[in-house]
Image (cartoon, rainbow, N blue to C red; front, side, top):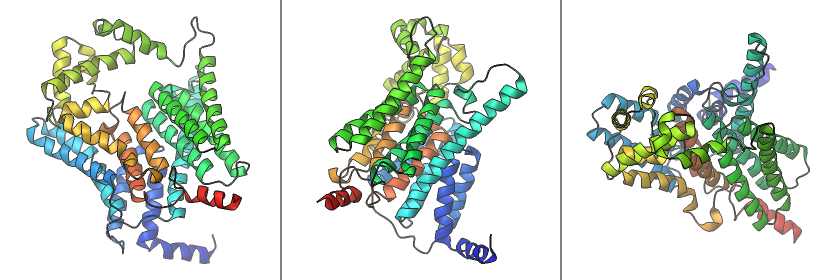
Length: 435
C-alpha cells in the first residue's frame, strides 16, 4: 500500500462514522464465522457510537419497540424468579435486544453503498464459515485415518449448532435472491452467475447440515419467492427458485437411494415420533421424540402459569422438576430447554409476552402494503420457522443474528435501496425505460 493510501486510510479511521459502518460490517461478517468475538464488537460499536456527531433518533418503527419491550419484560420477570443467577445470565444473553436497537435507532441511516456492504460482509462470512467447516472435515479425514470423509452435520459446522448454521445459510440465500431480483437490470451478468452459484452452494450446505428445520425454512422461503416472482412477472426468478428447490429435493433423495426404504432427509423420524405418541418417548430413540416430549412439559407449565409465567430465572428449574417428577433422567442430565421459542417464552413469562414475540416477527408486515420490506419479511420467516424446533432467542447465536438484522432493516425500512416488495424504485425505473 502506497504511503498516500495509508495516510488516507488513517485519516478515515479517525472519523467516527467511518468506524461505525465498518464495525457493523465486521459484525455481520463475524456472525457465521466466529461467535466469540461478537460481544466485543458490539461493545466497540457502542463505544464508538458515543463519538458520532449525529445521534438523532431515526425513523420510528414497531420492530424497535418490540425488541426493547421483549428485553424489558425479561428484566421485569426477575421480580418473581427465585433463581436470580440464571435469570441474570438470561438477561445478559438477551442484552442485544436493547443495545442493537438503541445503536441503530440513534444513528444515521446507512447510505445505499454502506447498507449493501454490510450484506456483502455477511454473505462472505457465510462462505468463509462453510470453507472452515469443510477444511476441518478434510483435516480430520487425513489426520485420523478413518477412511471416511464426513462432510455433514456437526462435521460441517463444528463451531455452530446445525440449526443455527442452516438458519444463517438460509438468510444468505435470501440476500442473494434479493440482489438477483432488486439489484440487477439483467440476469445474464458475471455477478449474477456468481450469485446463482452461491445460492446453490449455500443450499447444498443447508442439506449437508442435516437440519430438518433449516430445510423446511429454505423450501418455504423459496416457494414464497416462486409465488412472488409469478405475481411480479419476473419469470427467470421463478425458474431459479424452482431449480434450487429441485436441487435440494434431489440431493435428499439421492442421499437415501441405497436405503431399504426411500426417505427424505430424516423426516421419517418425525412421522414415527408423532404416531407413537408420548407413551413411547422414554425410549429416547430420536431427537424428534425428545422434542415432542419437552414440548408437552412446556405446555404443562404454560397451563399452570398462563399470565406471568414461572419467571425469567426459573424456567430451567421448573422444567427439570417436571423431568424428575415424570421419570426422565436423560432430560434431567442434558437439562433441555423447551426446544421451541414460542413455548419457552410463554412458559417463562406468560402468553402476553408470547404475543409480543409474535408481534415482533410480524412487525415488518404491519406497514403500508406498497412498502413491504423484502429482507425484513424473510428474516422473520426464517427465524420464525427456526423457533418451532429451537429456542433460538435463548442463546447468543440466535439473539445477535436476529437483533442485528432486525435493527438494521428497521433503521432502513423507509430507504429506497431496492428492498421493498411492491413500491421498488428499480422496478419502477425499468418500467419507465420500457415505456
